Image 1 (tube, helix red, strand yellow):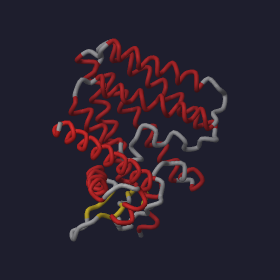
Image 2 (cartoon, one colour):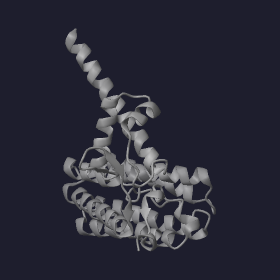
Image 3 (cartoon, helix red, strand yellow):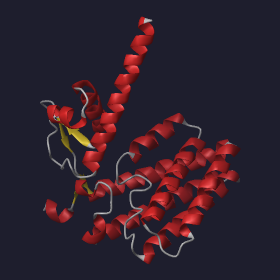
Length: 256
């Protein structure tokens, strides 16, 4: 009886930590906690409605993700990111996803995963069939796109690669949907998504054909769309705010 109670308490503690971690990430990415701002544990306890133990665990996890910096004397501050760091994060995701695609092709991806990935792409085709994309269309695309990238990581058959991909994708700029809404009201934005979709199809085809080198190269190229979208966003304050976590970006001009 005591064992069951202990397990329930442990599960509740994990749930509270996850809740605090997700909410804290939202506050940081949404700009409600500004770069350089010191995190006050007691304030978070009141704001999030959880105890100090899960708050501390969540802060530690977000520090591991790279969204917070640990202070020498204890505590944390919200981190900011240089343009080079963002480019590097996107490049790292492309490298890891390239590896995942190659492993999936060489080891042989499960047919059920390939079928589910193709279903995701069929759904994206339906979304992109409209001549112009509204807010609902972008949301539908983002959900299907995230699922496709998750399936790719699963196809690799490597828990190590999957975990590392999950870690790098927690950075707002490196997630597969980090730049989906950049220039969202421009025809060029839909064109970019169409190119990405063609790459999605080509990657799945390469994996199914067991063409590892081709699958890897395609995924590396796929990440370059995000790099171009980042460059476009940095040139326009009007579109920069569309990027999740834009408040964390340290502009070169401001750093001088």
